Length: 223
Image 1 (spheres, rainbow, N blue to C red):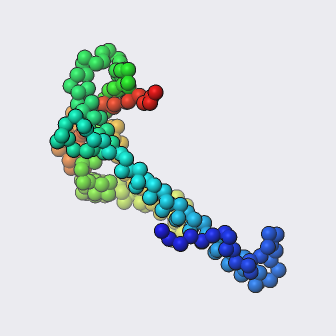
Image 2: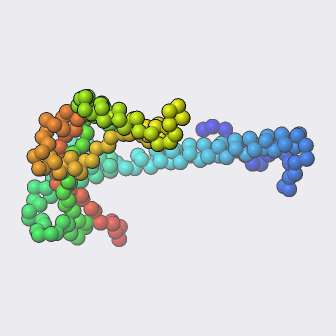
Image 3: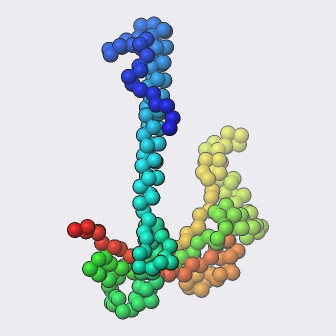
């Protein structure tokens, strides 16, 4: 562990409990004490964090489950066991959804918790590995037509203030930047006015919504 500074070793030359500054030397003493106070706080915080991490590391060793009923069962951490059972419960619930809920019900309650079902919505989004900048560069390529270039040139020529050399143009003060409306893109896809091929040209794709299952264990009562 690192050496810890202590408030017990406050330098004697520092100003008293009701300090005043009357000259440059006293100002420098204030700066000196501010530096010392900052160092003390950082030192104590660092020592505390070291002790906390040491305790956490020690306690983590207790988060191991052993299974005494089988000789060949490997010990497992509590987190790994939680993930194992959570995934097992989700798999079972998905396979038996029709028997667990009906009508508008979305949750099945049990004595020790509940299972909730939800439907992830369909959406249009960026393809894997494609970011906003790359997608709009693809859009730029599609927009390289004489008509679009004429419209853009016209927009850039619009004058807000002044004229001639003193003119202040629209594009100088307002950013003309396109933005996807993903809701409308999805609507047009569902109306068959956009296809997967169309979306791909923009670096986009359609994502089908999937069933989601959430396992909600109740608060454990140790008795």
